[in-house]
Length: 169
Image (cartoon, rainbow, N blue to C red; front, side):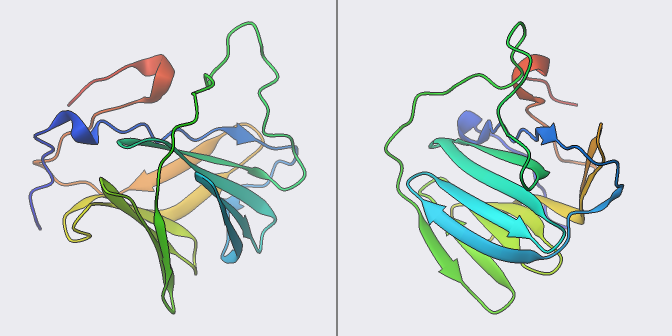
């Protein structure tokens, strides 16, 4: 297995999952049903009626948000916002469709979006050096989101979102 160490800070990425759901199902989010690209984001809908938004925040940062279709993605708690509004930057990307997946390419990274089941993987810009990949589909309930990522003994994790700051272990 390749070494996934991230030497440079250019891959300080924030991949936040926000969960907003009204039902209490505990099942994977399903297969990709539709994908629409606009400005700096992708809107994905699954066959299990889950909406996933991939937003390009900066050249090094993107955000994933998932919630049940029809549920507002706006945070309800304004006293302590979990996701802070980010100014929109002019970011270009290419979206390529293959038989089983899409590739979202920026100048810094590549996101592979598997269609069935819906799984995400992140690569460096060469699309060869894997940074992380989901090994199981995102699992949502009314109160939790579980993302299962691959790991390697020599890799380091940077991130944790806006509230947990930056750390490596």
